[in-house]
Length: 93
Image 1 (cartoon, helix red, strand yellow):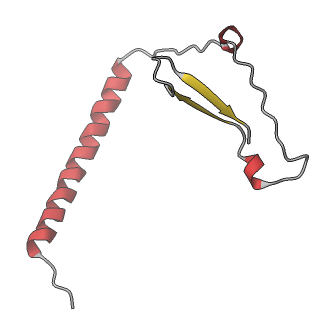
Image 2 (spheres, rainbow, N blue to C red; image 1 turned 120 degrees about the vertical axis):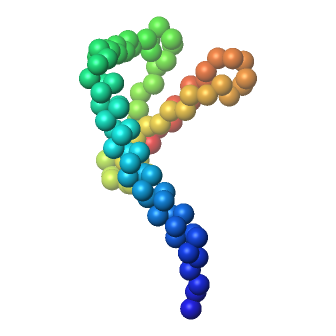
Image 3 (cartoon, rainbow, N blue to C red; image 1 turned 180 degrees about the vertical axis):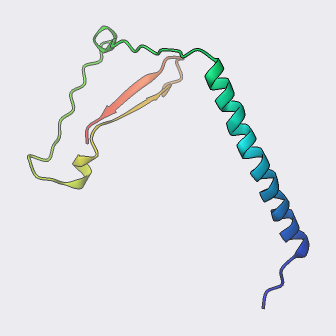
C-alpha cells in the first residue's frame, strides 16, 4: 500500500484554491479590457505574384483516395540559410 504525503495533499489543495480564485478574476479583467478597447481590423494583401511566388497544389493521387495526399499542401517559413531573409518552402500533399 502506498503512503500518501499529507504535506503534498495540502500543497495541491492550496493550488486548487488559488486557481479557483485566480481564473475567474483573470477572465473578468480580460473581459473588461476587451469591452473598453476599440476593435482593430486586420487586412491581408495578396502579394504572392509580386514576390515571385507561383505555387499550385497538385494532388498526386490520380483520383484515388490515399490518406497522405488528403492532408493537402504545406509550407515552412524560416531563415534557412541565415541571410536575414525568411525562406519559403512549399510541399504538395
